[in-house]
Image 1: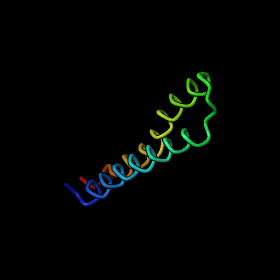
Image 2 (image 1 turned 90 degrees about the horizontal axis):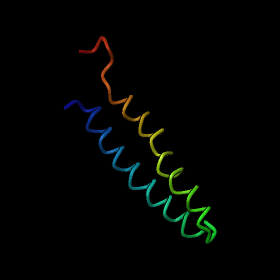
Image 3 (image 1 turned 120 degrees about the vertical axis):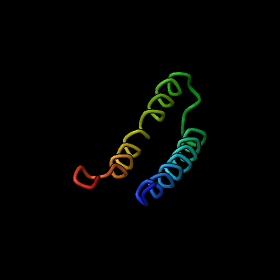
Length: 67
C-alpha cells in the first residue's frame, strides 16, 4: 500500500468517528422532540458524510501517470 492509501485510511476512520459523534451530539442537544424532525435529520446526516469521504478517496487514488 502506498503512503497515500494508509494516510487516507486513517483520515476516513477519523472522519467517520468525528462525524458520527458530532451528528449524534447535534441530534441529542438540538433536535426537537419530533418524529418529523428525526425523519428529515437522520437520512440527511447519513448522506452528508459521503461528500468529505469522496474527497479523501479521490485524493487516495494514484495519478494516471503515476502507475
